[in-house]
Amino acid sequence: MVAFRRWRAARPFWGGLLLALGGAEILLTQKASLKVVMHIGMQGLAGYLLPLLMLICGLLILFNPAQRLFYSVLGVLFSLGTWLTSNLGGFFIGLLLGVVGSCLAFGWLPNQEPRPARSWRRRSREPVRQP
Image (tube, rainbow, N blue to C red; front, side, top):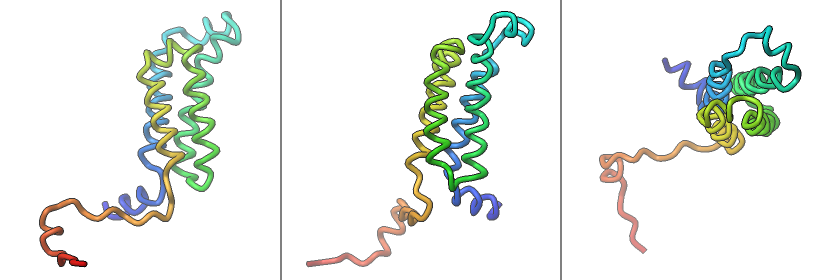
């Protein structure tokens, strides 16, 4: 469990996870079989391609955090593209998950110090500073 926490802290975990979940949700909302999509043409194929690329970008953010800026920009573009190609972005849920996840990954800083704990016990132990 400690190893997973250390791994998770070294990457934009929640951003990549939300982006991947958004792509998976949009893929699950597609009802047409692949045979129908091939007959429809590129518009139908893009309905499967963009969410798949969202899923791949989310996984790449998780496993290659050094390139998170590039993958998060691609992820938000793919997410916004699903508005037109994939049932209004998976009925808005996948679209919102993808955009929020991409924004979280874009804003993540790798060497940021952890926040101090918010518990009341910690505040009571700290000495009061007076000017």
